[in-house]
Length: 347
Ligand code: HEM
Image (cartoon, rainbow, N blue to C red; front, top):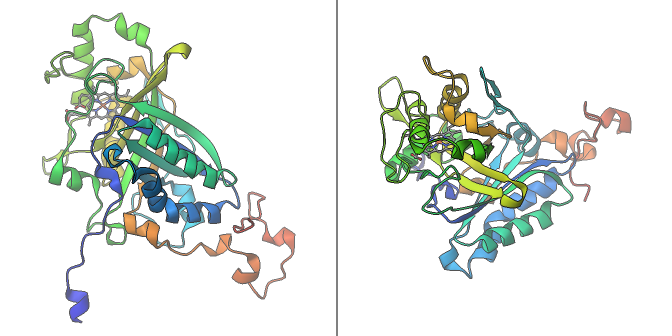
């Protein structure tokens, strides 16, 4: 009919494309057995909670992106799986390893003021405390002139505008999830003593840009070269990074929280293979000799409208009486293979 022939408006994404901010919190949790209902309620309320915390401070530009991990998708939503959603693939390189670590939900909070990120993270955890296990929480900050703790300006070659949208947002290739995105996070710790012992020229060769002027150099095997990749058509394949320094000088902890959004995780995964497995004649990205990946998780980021109107809870997670009215509800038979009751809504 005429209605179905009309072009559909592009689904509004979550604020994945929001501009660089000076503060961020990265919160990764797993959903406890039976916590599904509580998590769904929070996800539906997330845009409202973000407005409640941030609206009074418009200059703070508070935003929150929620991502869902592969295992959690089937527990939370009776809906087709996003085509690219799978557990993060660990990599074992000749020298360095990218581990895969647990994560059912990612909250990527950004603002011009840490107190806004903090306030929203506190609200989220008040709601989720009884339903999740926190796996990682990192407070990131902008350091000097948008430099990482290695001292290099980080984020320069990020795509902007239409190129950023094309790099990050799912389109016709997966119509049921158009407007969504994928995000990979990795928490890295740096060996700053070893790094700072290098002459600046050696550091620049490793990164592939100059340190003070941030000008691109042409170094084979540099971090920049290994992460400049092209598709079969020769066009550059890009991701959108929002890395943040974090750390604790008192504990001697200096890190980079890597976060990369992409329309398909394949692009980020190819970059990671280049870094950890190498591209001959480079055996691995030399940045890894000074940076250790402690975490690695992949999430799907649904479009904004998904949160307003979640798909139903899967039958396995609804009350047995409602899911199978004819069955004998003996406790033993109702147990999931993992021994849990596999039901939500106990609270
Ligand atoms: C570029 C730092 C991890 C992908 C850069 C640059 C710096 C940097 C300083 C040059 C300026 C820029 O364009 O941003 C770091 C640090 C990391 C890290 C400190 C963690 C220890 C990663 C990872 C990936 C990645 C894990 C991908 C999976 C890229 C890409 C570029 C880049 C795509 C731009 C290349 C270009 O087109 O010029 N990174 N990075 N980085 N990095 Fe990283």
